[in-house]
Amino acid sequence: MSNDGMLRTGITGALIMALCCFTPILVILLGGVGLSAILGYLDFVLLPALGIFIMITIYALWKRQAA
Image (tube, rainbow, N blue to C red; front, side, top):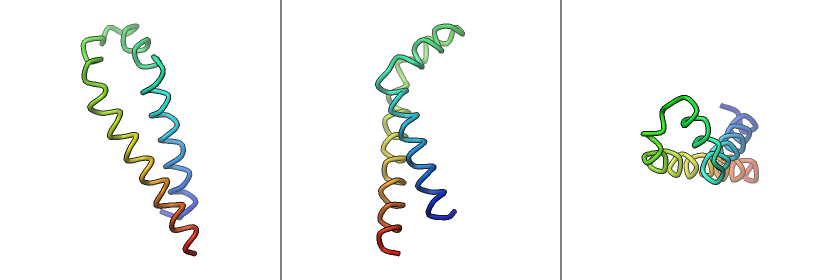
């Protein structure tokens, strides 16, 4: 993956994960379709995913600076 693609993926993923973590978007969506039983487990998935996307962004910025 190119550096620009990796940076774009990291920033987009981090923004989406931040919206899902800090706003009730998933709570409303999952409650609307009847899957509210899994809301307790969202933190086990969303917070590590947010960390991974932030690390991808940092790595892409580091590679861009080194080039």
